[in-house]
Image 1 (tube, rainbow, N blue to C red):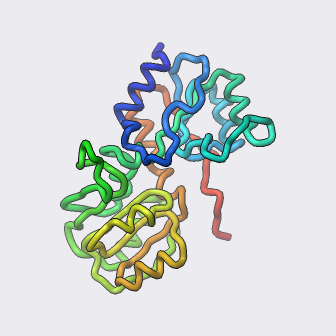
Image 2 (image 1 turned 30 degrees about the vertical axis):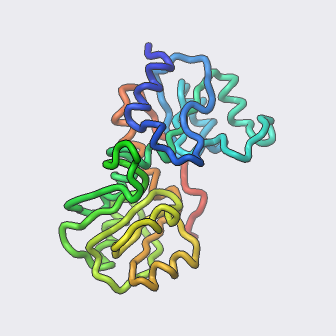
Image 3 (image 1 turned 60 degrees about the vertical axis):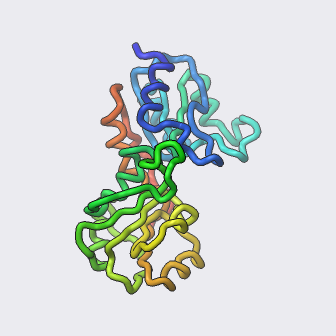
Length: 251
């Protein structure tokens, strides 16, 4: 039976925690008591997801978004009943978040795989290994129209719709970032399209003034589709949450 330390080493090999943004809260956030044979994966650790993980008899929950962040100062049934239930069940909670975005073959690379690219690089290279880092920019194998770029995004992410602010440039260089990516993507230069989950209104306008097309999918729709691929890379029994979902819906 793999120990917790064995599991942490495996997760570190996939997404080294040193790659995480300095504001982030990554790694082992809740240390339980179990050895690890079954890992449960989710983007957000909601109450419904906690119920699902308990029913699945998970030993470790890998929650992409850290359920413990800067604003949490105490654990009570009012603000953290899900975490308390996991503690009482001896279940560990681990969050890779931006470390997984930045890692080789991580979430950033997967999001860039929306397009066929001839070369790729991080938007913000890591100081030690410049081949990895936050965000991705890629040169396409051929120029795309905005219609083609939209169709590829929907197909890759399994979406029926996206929000688009169409630019004026033919699309040959693209920049992507999971989640809310403007602060990262603002460092991208000479790109024709940016793809992320969400962005402020005035930031969208700033991009379109430069002729750049903006595609927004809602935050977690740039993240959730990567979980089954991550599960396949873990040498454990894995379960991907079925109730984890974007909190916003189109009616």
